[in-house]
Length: 50
Image 1 (cartoon, rainbow, N blue to C red):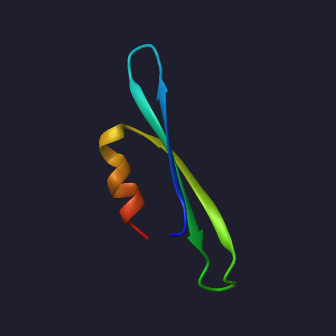
Image 2: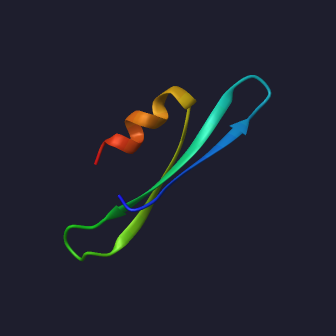
């Protein structure tokens, strides 16, 4: 993982976080971005898994 970005989003009742991680494809070697919107407590788990 070469780069990670975390942005905080707030809605009326819930606090959400958009996490973006850059993943290198084992097949082609190209990088792709994986985005997900989740609660702030789940961000570390998302960034740790491959």
